[in-house]
Amino acid sequence: MDRLIIKGGRRLKGEVEISGAKNAALPVMAASILAAGENSIGRVPDLRDVKTMGRLLANMGAEFHYEPHRAVIKTNRIKNFEAPYELVKEMRASVLVLGPMVARYGRARVSLPGGCAIGARPINLHIMGLEKMGAKIELEAGYVKATAKRLKGATIYFDISTVTGTENLMMAATLAKGVTILENAAREPEVVDLANALIAMGARIKGAGESVIEIEGTEELKPVNHTVIPDRIETGTFMTIAGITGGDITIKGCMPEHLHAFVIKLEEAGVGFENKAGSVRVIGPARPGAVDIETAPYPGFPTDMQAQFMALMSIASGASLITETIFENRFMHVAELLRMGADINFRGSTATVKGVKKLKAANVMATDLRASASLVVAALRAEGETTIHRVYHLDRGYEKMEEKLRSLGADVKRERGKRLTSLP
Image (cartoon, rainbow, N blue to C red; front, side):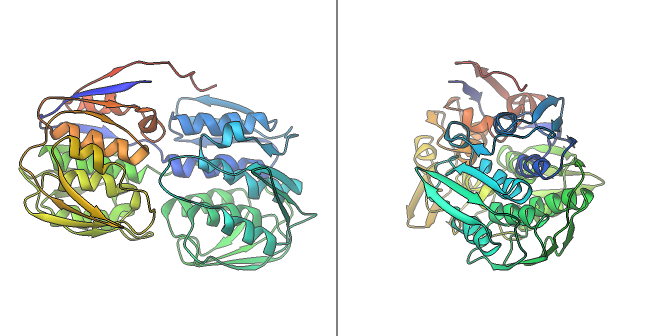
């Protein structure tokens, strides 16, 4: 397995370009199932999860080709309606093929999902919604089997906000007969981006980005030609890197308006911002101030930035409270930050972080995608040489992370383990 070796203590400066959002690209790739023909999706990052989704679509009979930052998917010959465990276990987003397959082909058999081990993330709301739309659901040997002659419009209320549930059912509803109403829908920018892609395919969708989305089904859709939005979590991670290193980083090709709550908290911590067209300059303080946060569904503080923000708070002046409300196991990075000299205690869903003046290098282990990012953030501040093991987690969500860091003046190198195959 690959590992990153980071010598900390440098003030990072320069410009960095943000990649396309993985969490926007994956659902749009799944949406290609809804129409026959050649789909072209731009600004797709070269990531492991993208490769996994491409393999899954190819296993179903689609032709998948990746060129620099573009995915081309031909869906004329889809003939296999199963998403097998061997692929789905690698990435939870694989479940996004469920809704499109049932909508277009009337059947699907999808393994229960895998992905980061950050708590139980059941797909019961996906299943509930499809059942309300007339699908027959059977659970057998770890698989969800769904069949329907044609899905029908329905009013569906989500007990909790679910991004993939909203996306799955929104895609399914585009080919359903009648009108579907999704209440308490997720409002994330990635949901809006998927809706924009579906509208370009001929779907009739109103209200994306609000808590109620209305979809009027149509008989057929045309192939998608779409460019995905910038990755707001990568953007936030580099904002945090500027903050913890006292850096001066201009982040290009980003949409900081997608991180409003996060930016406010960074400003409270003493991080400075200068907004420009399509970019933002981020200036870190000598030492940040302590700030309390509580994660919440969009437009609140993103759970995907909690670990990175905790790394920043670990060297803050004062004590902060960090409350995680989305996932129950999302403090796994705490043990590794403690190895680097952080002073953190947590009980249940709240962590108390007492800022220390210095972090020290250590051997640490990444446990999930955002935890790995938090260790990178901490290592860039720590004294000495930190080795981060199991960075395959990082590779699931950050494109060419070490190259971008080096361009800002970081001392970082990768030691290769077993090499992954390139994207087809």
